[in-house]
Amino acid sequence: GTLTFAGGFDLTVSASITVGSSSSGVGHIILNGGVLYVPFITNGTAGATYDFSSGNLYTTGSFTLPVGANSFWNLFVQSGTLSMGASITVADMIYISNLASLDPGSSTNIVGGGGTLRGDGAFVITAVGHANDLITQYSLDLTYAGGLSIYFEGGGPGQAINASLSCKNLVIDNSSGVNFHAYITVTISGNLSGTGTLNADTNSIYLYGNMTVVNFTPSASFVDMRGSSQY
Image (tube, rainbow, N blue to C red; front, top):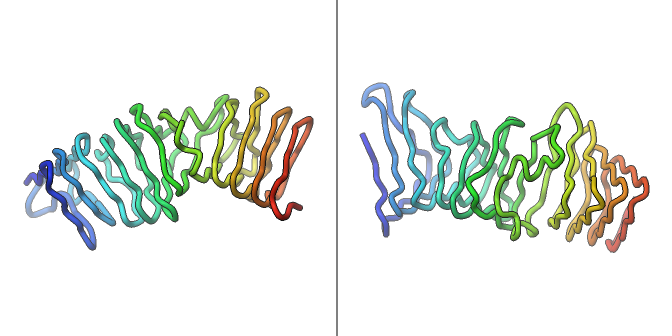
């Protein structure tokens, strides 16, 4: 069957939504201007379809978006970790609330669509091997993303950025290293931490919190430490 959320219609689910089942066949869920709050969504059968392209989806638990749930108007990650099983597009906005996070999963999964990325939670970067893994994986308007924490968690080769950015906390968890390139300025309003290696090269870092990243290679960088404690 098909469940459609029209404009002005809100539904809050306390447990989960299963779309389709072995007894009822393929299911379909459509946000046609409506609002859905849900902690977990899962496919009951192969072929379930989703259309979130004209409504607001609020996720309130930790789960992986099911196959087919890949096109959104507004996506609000309110709590828990929302993981991606494939690339997604967001036309208007992704908002990640405090204590919530967005994890793209595979290094090849992309968050695109031209919407804005906002909030005070966290997002993960798993893309590797590009001049700027941040903007490669998050092909969005990042103008208002300065309140978010960034986690570099790519495996294999080192990760990199080559454009100035601002963030809340910066966490380096890629053991192969994260490289800053091209004379950029990185402003961190919170802490710089992680178990990996940060290669600062010839760039400027303004740090307003604490610095506890395990390995730091300053090279010819300028580092302005304004936090209460460093190494």
